[in-house]
Every structure is written in C-alpha cells, then in structure tokens.
Length: 587
Image (tube, rainbow, N blue to C red; front, side, top):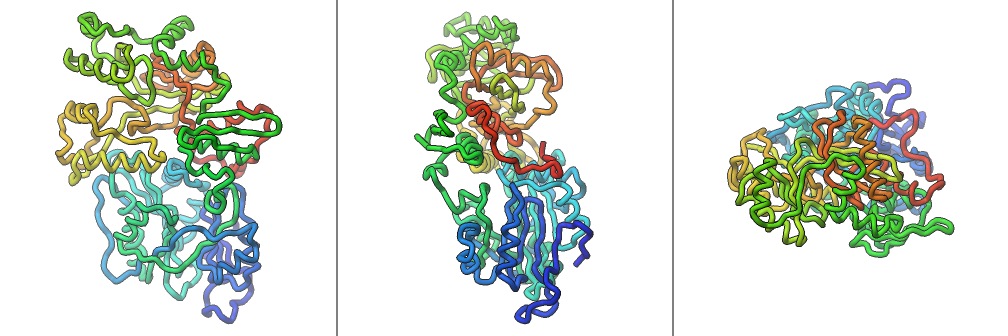
C-alpha cells in the first residue's frame, strides 16, 4: 500500500497496536476519504466507541459510510439518534479465474487521466443526483494511493465522460486477509445516449481486481433499485449478509425518516427539489397533492402554497398571458423583444401561402405545455396539414411561426433576476452497431425516465417515426456504431430532451431580454425560451414563457434556493455543503 502524504485522503493507525482478535498485520481504524464522504472499514476498528465517534465527525454536506462493522445493530443501538442501518443490500462477485472484460459499443472504459476528467466525473454525479467530490481529493487518491481506482467511460464519438466508477482494493489499503475489494459511486450520465455503460464499467472494475488476484468485489445497492439489482445479479453478484451504517443527516433523511410529511417521497423531482431546500432551512412542508406537486410551505407566521415552481404569487392574469402564446407574442412586441413572424392558423390556403413565403415553420397550439402538439421544421403542404391537425387536438386555435435558426435556450427568471441558463437539445441516440433504432430509443427513454422520476421519456409516436425517417432510417434498422441520430425535433425535456448548463457563458443581453419579458408578463417566476445562434452572442428570437419552469433541470445552479429566497425573503437559510476550501467543481 502506498504511504499517505501529509494531509492525504487516507487516515490510518489510530491505535498503536493491532487488537488480539484481528489478523496480525492488518491496519487499524482505516478511514478512506473519497470526497463525497468517507469510507470506514468497520472490521479494522477494535473499539466501537471510536468507530461511532468517527461517524459523528462527518463533514457538512458529505455522506460517510461504515462498511463491515462488527455487530452493526449494537453500534446503532448505542447511538440511535445519530446512526442508522442503511436500507441497502450488499452484493458480492467472487472471482473464479475467468476474464470478466467485455467490449462495449460506442464507449471506451479506461482509468482517469487528468483533473479535467475528474471534474467531468463530478458533472456525471450531479446529473445523477449524487454528492460530488472535490477534484483535489479525487486526483490525490488517483496519483497517491494505489488502493483506489477511478475508471471513466468515455464516449468514442466526442471524448465526453459519460460514466464513472470507483474501486477500493482492501488488500492494498489495509492488508485485508480476505483479499477483498469493493465498488463505489457507479454513475452513468442520463443523457449519454448509449446503452450498457453501467455494465461495462462494472465488468472493467471487476476484471481489474480479478487480475490483481483479489478474491471478490463487494458493492452496496439500495433495496428498491430494481434496475441495478437486476444488472448485478445478471453479472453473477450474490447477496451477502453485510450491513452498512450511516449518520443521520439531511442528505440521508429519506433513508431513515420518510416524513414528515409522509408523502414527500411521492413528489416528482420538480417539487421535491423545492421541498428538500425548504426542509433544509427549517421550513415546514405539508404535501397537499403529491401527484401534482402541490405543497404548503410554512415558517413563522408566513404560509405559501406552491405547485412545483408555481406559487400563489403568480397571478391568474400572468398565468393566462403565459398560457396564451398569441398574447405572449403581443406583449413581447410591445416590450421591444424580437419575435418570429407568425399568424393564427385559418386552416385554408392562407396557411400554405404563409409557409411558402417564410420557408419552414413551427406549428403549435396557442395553449399547451410540455411540447405537446408542437411540430418543428414543417416544409411540405401535406406536412403542414398533418401538423395543424395534430396541434388542433390540443387546442382549437393554432399558431404558425417562421422557424428561426439556433439552439433552444431556457433562462429561469426569479424575482427579476436570471438564476440559470441552459441549452435544451432534442432527444438523440448513438448507434452501437448491434442495436436497432427502436432499441436505442427504448434504452435512452428508460435512462431519462429513471433520472427524472418518470418525467422525461421519448414518445414512440408518429413524430418520432417521421423524424427518424427524415434522417434516412427506420425503427427496425441497426444504427452503425458512433452514428448520432436525432429522434425528436423539439428540445422539450418531457419528451426525452437533454439540457446543458450555460449560465456562466450566456450574454448579458439575453439575460436582459428574459427579465424584460418576465416584467412585461408581470410573472415573478418564469422560464423564458429563446432561439439563439450562440449563447455568448446577443442575437435571439423569443419563443415563449413558461409560468412553471422545472427547477430540477438546472443543477448545479441553485434555482430552488432562489425560489425559497423569493417566497421567504430574509430567511437566513442553512450553511451550504460547499466551503471556500472546496469550490464547486461542477459549475
């Protein structure tokens, strides 16, 4: 095992000599800092009180885990208000001498190479709602401790890091007589666009430890994560009676205390991010309707009802202005905001004449949300008729607009300030050379649904089929390895679209336009959509305003915090997980 440097991530040797009942030579009181939290190897602790004390010293915003503790039930019973047994299963893969490596289409799994990739690992963690780690901790472990292995899955097409896994070699860390190893922090970017990344990372790490001569590899998985459990059992992992212990903190609260309120776990991600922020600040959350995300937030003498990011401070007039796209366009023109040429459909020759004059168009119902009924890139007369009929299913009045070039930019405005900006991209899949287009869509849709609590899925409908056909493919054809295929025309997240944070790059003029539109509508919280050729430039075309933007889509920007600040002005909040010594590496 490599000797730790001063201030290194490994803490060893809290006792001078090994206890009599431990194997001679095994290190004492082993604690490994992985950044997102510390791993305590319970079998190396002779004193249960010392182990409990180490768990109590958990840093704010981190998630420490004690594994392999002796008599874990007794340890928790001695500190029931501070510790709890994690409701997870432990799975073990025993190595039988056969190679576990397997090639994966479209990606390369390899060790971490540089700090930039460590930063990219954090972005994957954040997209998976996991606790990120300071880059310095990751990098110091990587270069200074041969007991820790970081693998990344890199997309062959563009070199992007789309997955990661961490491995710990017990034998090199503390001379484990069982010659064990363990897997931690397996994460796959929900927008990766390729199937099988998690399996490839798991196989690669297992092969790494098998080649080192280890006897087995353990991992911990939450008891209700059926998809992960199915993968591990398919790979030959078997459940073993090993328990994990954690400290009761805000991050872990859903694991040891689902309430109050009792139905907070039923909230969708867009309401849950607000509820979590409120509870962290000591604001009482009463779930009124979990299905719609309706809650009552109360602190002191102030009580506010919200439905996701829509609150009672948004007037009915402002809602109607956002809902009616014709009215929104008129307000934009009055405010000096650039809009695309458009007309209300008359369902006759004049609609076709307008399309012939301006080129390809966007057809959408004047009222609606989540991209329903919208068709983008209509150029042919029969396509226009079909798009008009599709939009008319959602509203009797339909808007036809000239299609403006550029990317779909969403700016979240709260209390006349832009708090987040993100590019939204239509759903895409990447070929593997072995999967059909339909299979790739299904896999990507499952991944997006899992990452968003079922909120984002790719519809397999006539629009998707037409988009695929327009690109020269069919659902049943195998997409060649590395080929990217756009399967939807709109960038709506509810229809499988992805999002990229660009808050730091967006031009001030675009922010000014977003605030101007929010003020024109008189809406305190809104998502302003623009089409922009370049987020760092000042060119744009206004698309629409949303009175209930999804705040969970914009992490790592603190949109939920800004929302709570607006609802409860002057509330001090709680200290954040990030300290000046540990700057956000995912910003």
